[in-house]
Image (cartoon, rainbow, N blue to C red; front, side, top):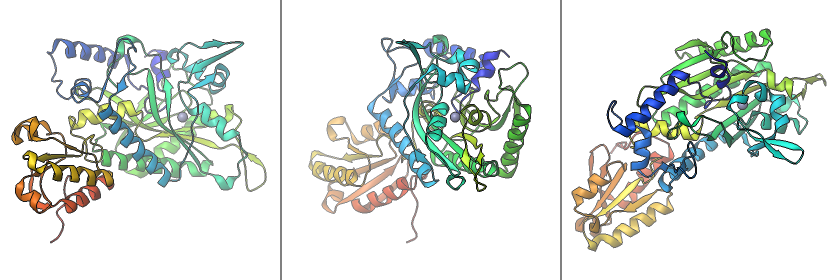
Length: 449
Ligand SMILES: [Zn+2]
């Protein structure tokens, strides 16, 4: 294990908790993708991303710098909104902070010394040097420090979906899983030592709920500990205390987990939720970390009930990690058939002939008013059978023939092959909206009649 593999472990979810072995596997996967043999890559997110028009890359923009096409942007936006809403409900407040920071900021945080190999080179700006940030933590620590805080404000939960950058070598870049520009679902909870276990446990529960809504299955839960020879900040007693707290949280959660040495962040141990891609390669998506180091480095404090200054603890947590890796995983685990609430097009309207076009238009307008993403595939796009096949990844298809048009009905087909009898267009929209609003992974629920 080299020092770099330990340094990786930084920062959150996207912290690439992948070893060099995985990097080799990525390179192999690239070759497989090109020569079209080897493993079954039908669910490879890079291939599906292109086929479905979700994202792409261009050599002129650069390796590891994917751009998002409109359908991919819809998925990403919907995912981000889901996260922000869940965070607001859980008492988080959102902030924005810049993707650049002065070199000194990262010298104080320890990134410069412990994570420098993964950072882009600094840019000279007059007498100063600025860097593209490798994590959001230092900015959030500074934001916390900018105002005085009383113990009554704790736990103070600060969240941001923000950009960060990693100087990955071009040989290991691919699709959305290894990128140089990362949008991280990040948050830092500033709290007292007594509050840590509760906050970390709640974060773990938030992760579990998100996975349920997203229909994704973790490969395993990992308690990531320091290993021999890595670059870690000193203070063994703080590491022990943080490890004991995370162990307590995992034991109380009832989730099966295993401890892994050499996977900790440089500033503390963490709980990692591991996921596997279509080729079986494992990576970290979500994470919960306890950090005594950064509060010390940045001189953070709050005024306690005794009127004195006390040091808060920082809990770093990410629910879905980076949106890039989360979307890659969603594409692979669902083969492009996203849960209905995330699907770029949720309802495909299929008028049998030109005569039903006015009804089809009225239905898409009704959907738009209700926040449902509907499109029309008209008869100019082929036979009904061909249009149904073409829309096979769309969760709902509404067929409108002469009989349905006359009574404002739709014949609904579900992506899983189920066909529902004609029902009033308004009822169909109501029931779909109820399911998507609830972030359900079920396509339909039979109501008691
Ligand atoms: Zn952090």
